Image (cartoon, rainbow, N blue to C red; front, side, top):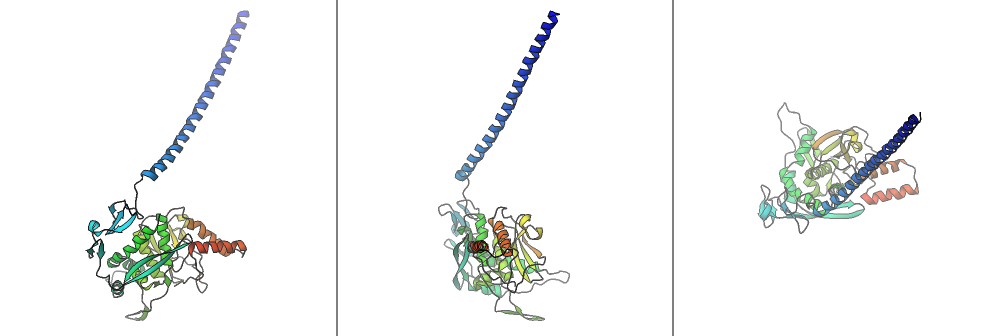
Length: 369
């Protein structure tokens, strides 16, 4: 009996020791696991921190358009100069576009006659600035003399897009518009600011119809429609004309671009590829008004005569390029200004509206046509 009692005590003692050992082992395993998790997170944090620093210091430097330093740009004769940190003309190294001739480091077109200097104003985060740009009478005259109709066989159906793309894709015009694109790229520090400057620059061109008319069979006295270059030369354009100029610039920057045509309101605006969340009717393209300074994605603008855009627009594809980022501050500002318009007057509302007006150089009147 005594032996059984002793064996029982020994068994309990062994079980107790085993339990304590098992519990200690579990604690060690849990502690080791937690330590490993902490070390992994710490490693990831340190890696990301130093990777960012490494990218800042050792990343391949580029000019505003993304061209690597000391390389020729895709648009001749521009060269990404490391010393200047921007695109410069270097025809002796990069060559000239077809149809242009070399003159020192510059390429010359026979349309570059009758020069005049214009100032293209823009507002970026409340700061007003301008780009000085030369335009030429010969190029404007060449474009105004081009046929306004498109010839086709009986089985073909002409669309609005055929005329829009014809105006944007004229190659002679492109050669003299690229310098403006380069000037915008050199003025901006980020790709987002390139878009902002281009938008504001076009919005700040005066709204107005051409004083010329067209006489076509069956339609006399039609208003003349300008090419994008003519909008610059005249320093004036209507919604469709100004939208074509901005479409050219954003397309050449590599972005996805569409036209929004509101038939009921007879109005045209531009769209740039963006997150579905902020886009017009979930098209994947964000609204840009071109008739005057406004905030991208602000779709509740009231135009002169009390007109608002209520119809569903026709979407005309220009280019299927890149998307603007999801963190553009315009999204928040547009949402705020639309909310402020619908709220009761208050000192806060007035102060905030004035702040947004100053930030974007906003105007009181927008023209629908």
